[in-house]
Image (cartoon, rainbow, N blue to C red; front, side, top):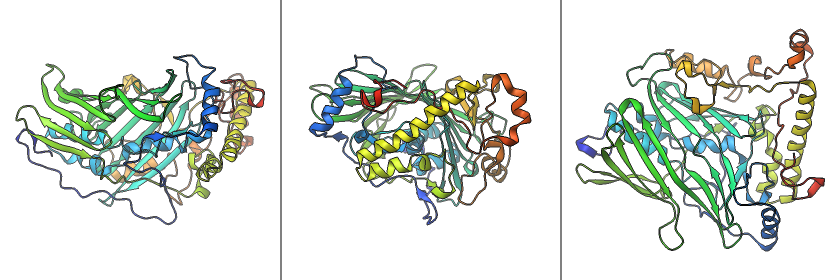
Length: 479
């Protein structure tokens, strides 16, 4: 792959490009380009709004319930933002074709590092998904095959976004749960991501290939995210702290430090780290460079240093989303469409009003659910089962069984039975309404299911209050 350690380069696959689709939406926007500046300059009125919010906070305060002004919001939901991680399929899809285990690991590291540069210009926070919101999409690959993605907000407080990705013909499955923990740190804010986990499985590799739950398994964590200069100076986006990529079966681990700039020293967007034998601590490779531009890998045995990935000239491949008119009212793009439209027009007042409509409706549904004794259950995901070999840190995994031993054609049928990902596909009634039953009226609910409302009651009991500090008679954090 990189010509390291005397290995030849087994990857000659062409870049995977998204085919054009007139009937479908591209899951991205013009502002989301590699190389965009990480700084945002706010005007005096916007600074006053931020100061009004911050004045009521103490360092270390939890920001998950705090009002955020619309001028710092990205016009997409976090469930959609997660797909940035998969927008370089040219680095992901070839992995299972690599015979050499060490080269496979290096390619996984390259894939892991290749998505961080994809972000909107400036400092923007994606919309917080509401409980029960979901998002689906797919990629048309250069190989002529497809990859599929399903995500759902499985918890609101604490926030958890669970997702599933699979490329059946290429024997790749990814399960992940994003678990951000937001904190106010004075002149900066942090989204702590170090409890989030991704499990990537290469179904055709490893000692358990071809067995249920088998395949070569890689565990990936995420760096923390910081916004500097909230009170003074320009707002600046940074990634920071340690994350890792590890494969227990191969006894390899990559410890990567995303370095934040010091007050007088250092550089923005720098990374550094080592790939080691986990059992012995022996260092094999060194990682260096910038996650926003060029990243390098050095073979510590031979001393040879090579370019690992150049984010400066990389072209992401956004996924395809079916048209809005075919989406369910709980799908991210349709749910937030009025809000996003206002944000794209820079209509902050309109965006705030539209966002309130979504959140106020959810609060009402939460009250109804509480009064009826209804227990919330995610639509597409279930709690992990360690007895099945599932990683406890994921918290949630896709509830539908996707047979690891089945043919790609059968796996695609199983995925499509979960959600209508493609344009023109039909919904499976099994997943139309989450199995919400009043705990004290379970039997009655079963006998009266035919009279269930067309729009199910979905939970959003702990929605963030996006209103101003005292707007609408509420104080910050009141829901």
